Structure formats: C-alpha cells, structure tokens
Length: 518
Image (cartoon, rainbow, N blue to C red; front, side, top):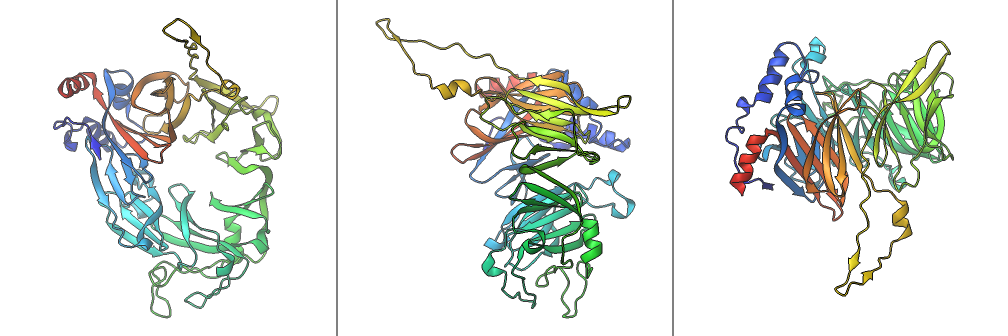
C-alpha cells in the first residue's frame, strides 16, 4: 500500500472534520444527509478548494468502492476512504476455500426512512461465500450479525442482486451441471433432471426468508439462457432473443407449499436456515405462469422506467438502436429511437438515471445526453426529448512531422482503421445523490483525465479538476464521490487493479504540501 508522504495531523481527527460536523448538524435538523449538503456543495463549486490525491492502492484482485468504503481482496478487507491515510476498518477472516466471499451487497439502514418496528438496523454488508453461507456483517466493525445456510454445496450460489433496492435481495445459483441434477441431497431431497438454476429471495430489516425455487427448462422452455428477479418480476431470457416477465406474487400464491421462518425449530431439532439445516424449496412451478410482458430484443436487455409505464430495448435484428416503447400500446413513442453512434468501435451506453426521475442517460464517445419523456395532453402523444447535452469534444492534434538531420521529411504510414474510429473522451459518470450533481470522468487533452461536476437539471459545468494518474490504457473505470472524497478505480491492461483517493482541500493547504514534498 502506498500513500503520500506528508501527514495531516489536523485533518486526521475525524471529530474535528467540518464536513462531518455539518452533516451531523443537518441530520439533527431532521434533514437527511443524502438530501442536504449545501455548504459542502458551495466549497466544491464556488470556493478556493481543489482535489488533492492523498493515497492510492494497487491490487491483483478486484477493488470495489461504495460511498466512504473501499473493499479489497474480494470484499474481505474494508478500508475507510474518508481518511487521509489508508485505514482498515475491518477484515473478514477466510480460513478455508469455502469461506471466501464471491459477491456482496451493502444495505444502508437510514432510520429516517424506515418504519418504527425496524429502527436500530445499522448499515451492514450481505456477503455470499463459496460454501453457500450468507453473512450479514456490521459495516462499522465487521462483526458477524447473522449467518444463513442457503443450500448444500452441490448447487453453487455465486450471485447476490437487488430485488427491490433497500428492501429485498435475490440469490442466484450457477447452472446446475447435468450430471448433478439426479444426485440425492443429504436431507433426502432429490433434484429433478430438468432443474436448471435455483433462486432464493430474502427480505431485509429484518432479514427474512421469502422463497426458494428452481427454474426448469421443461416448464420455461429449453432455450432458457438466463434468469433474474427484479421488482418482484421473474425475468426469463431465451437464446432466441425473447424476454418474458412473470409476477412473483402470482407464483407464490399458486405454487408455494410451505412458509418456514428463519431459525424455526424443525422435527430433527435443527434450526431452519442454520447450518447444517439449509433453506429448502418452498415453491414448485409445475406449469408456465401467466406472462405479464413479452418482447423480443437484441442482447436480451430490457430497461423498465419507474413507474413501469415505458420500456427501452433494442429491437431484434434491427440496426436502428435502442428505442422507447409504451407498455399500454406497445408502440414506440415519438422520436423514441436513440440511434447508435456512427463509425464507433464501442456500443453506445444507455441507462436509466439513478435519481429516479425516469430520465435516460445516453453516453456516447464524446457526449453525455440526458433525455426525458414529455407528454403532450392536447395532441395525446408522448415524446422522448433531449433535455441537455454535455459535450467533451477534443480538437484533433495536428500531425507531427519527423525530419532527419539532413532535412528530409520521413513519411509516416497511417492505418485506415485508425482514421475511421473516433477516440473516446467520455469515460464514465456517476450521480451524487447527496449534492444532486453529475460527476463525469472524461479526457481533456489526450490521456489527461478530468473530473467535472455538472448540475443535474441543466447540465451546466460547476467545477472541474484534473486527475494525476494516467488513464490512457485503463479498463473498467469507475468513480465514486462521497461528501469530500473522490475515488477513481480502474483496471490496467496488465490485469492490475488500482484505486486513487482524492480529498477536497483548500488551495493553500495543497501549496504547503507541494512545498514540503519538494
């Protein structure tokens, strides 16, 4: 682990941090810290402050960042990114291969947004291990709060996803190999030969078991390629491009045959969901449920707006791009096609905005576009219109001439493919909910990376700051901004992972640091 040389004794005391005191003051005034950070926004956008890199980290394993926390070594080590020096908050012991974490989610228990019976639930991490254990650990100290035995190791659960964000999660197994589908489990249960994947749904605050069931190709079709559960919709994707959605509420009413609770005593005196008694299937889908929605699209990717009044997808075997359709009529809205970028070596990146406004983010090589649905009541039609555009075009550098000592100009060979493909200048973006801003990572001059802060509703540039690291050969970039901390994480072409931590500081402090290090 590497860190900057100077020590910040004055800032290292978290109790004296002005940002934390301001957040605490606003919280005591019954204003959530996620909705009101006006003073910190002024420091960032109007005052004489800048971002200065205070430490960085390299690793051969994936680095994940969420808010003020950085997770290293596959979520087994948690580092506080808000500190001016690398400070390990906790470390999860992995004494065996089965205890290694494969996937994790963070749950934030904000008291002001929870019902009274659920008060007192602190922020925690849900971690899924190779041994099919679901661990709930306190994010403050890493203490184990709960442990659930999801299933026997014969079926490997490796993915944990949100079903309803902040309310329930979904665990999805890997594809069950054919040779294992007829084996008998320890508890006497037998896997049917047509079982393909298993799914577990759990609710949060408190952690409760909802259901466990198998997806059968005999029921859903032999061309099933992938499954997921989101917003209580079972989504089944087929190799033919069809995407079909089914109601989990209907499935539970029709096919649920037991409803055991976690840690309920069983007949053999074991506690349900506690090792060695795993969660068992309580739903058996014997026939195809009623299909709520069906569409055929490219890459089997459908995005639903919230509320689900419209959906976006790339029509099957079409080259027009991603289009927006109405659920009610099934017709494309007016100007609802986002055409793909011409002569691009990359696929356009289109997603729903994270601020739950229903807007669409379209990120091209050189632009970030914000689109929204506009309803015309007089003429009774809905139109997809462009709200604003953030452009990061870079003027091409004039070709350089190589001249020998005798004055002869050396002709350089230019590959035609290199001329046709534009360079990517817009790298990635993230939405800061605390300050209601768009944080955009882009290239300003060749390989010089810049982080720009833009107003979320008009796209105006508020401030921008250069980064110190070279990102010319970086892959899988991501940025994370929380209060006064900016984290830039990426993967290099050599397979190494890096994260660089920046802190918001007065320019006078940064100047003193430069003089001391010089």
